[in-house]
Amino acid sequence: MIFKELEELGILGINNRVGRYILRHNKREYYPLVDDKVLTAKRAAAWGIAMPENYLVIENYGSLKNLHLKINDYDSFVIKPANGSQGNGIIVIKEIVREYVEGKPERILFRRSNDKLMDIEEVKHHISGILSGLYSLSGQSDTAIIQAKIDKHPIFDNYSFGGIPDIRVIVFEGYPVMSMVRLPTKSSDGRANLHQGAIGAGLNLSNGWVNNAVIRNQVIETHPDTGHQILGLKLPFWTEILELAARCYDMVGLGYLGADIVLTPDQGPILLELNARPGLAIQIANLAGLVPRLEKIRKDAPKDLLSSQRVEFSMKHF
Image 1 (tube, one colour):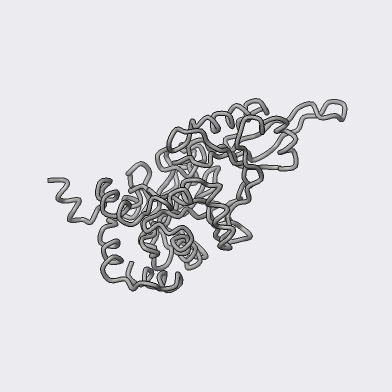
Image 2 (cartoon, rainbow, N blue to C red):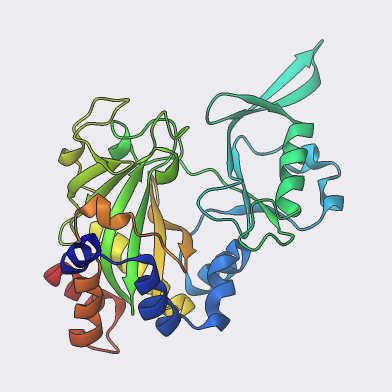
């Protein structure tokens, strides 16, 4: 009975997502452009789409030699697997602590976003785990990326604990169909990861207003750490965010994808990464099903429109 009710509400399930939308609209040959963050960055650069700068790309264990010298010029950075998912394997270094004895450097420590300190050997050990495939989608050997750390936009000062919020936009055949912003909490260890306890806040496609917020499927009204009312949040650069997400379809050619976007203080919205198999919790965050929107695009949306025209269609109908 419950499955019939979910179907009537237009809720997209895992099997339907894979069989009806992912397999039919995502060509296998395009998956590497999304699954491999190094390839995504190269593709985005060619398309003029801004992403965080990759400081280092570490492909083998030999590249870990003298790592402390290679990262010495950076004040902060992010370590992530090129083929990871759901935020696994990502470490944010928000500060490098240099200890001196008699004016000479004694050692270097790396302060994480949760304020825990790591030494260089711990950093190397973590990167070795990435290279071994510990966090990769397939379990195969992977590449580690040391990337520029992004500062959060001040709009999120009262809505985020520790980390950087990101905006997930589901794009179908180039049309944005649903969006949410993921807000880090103390329980999520400052990460924008819903599985670890971050807030999923649904967004009206028409204007960027938060329409609902949940933590682990529980509806909430205020941020548990800041006490701020979440429903009062309206994202700036909303049209630009949707147009960036829509352009990602043109860039990689996948008909069903998730675009993760961050708002920066100086650049506005930039692309963080893409996902060829975006999760379904965005429906809970919005208290709405994806199926009616996907079918609206499939049946009624014009083809061969510019990204800005596709965004205009979505803002009008969703």
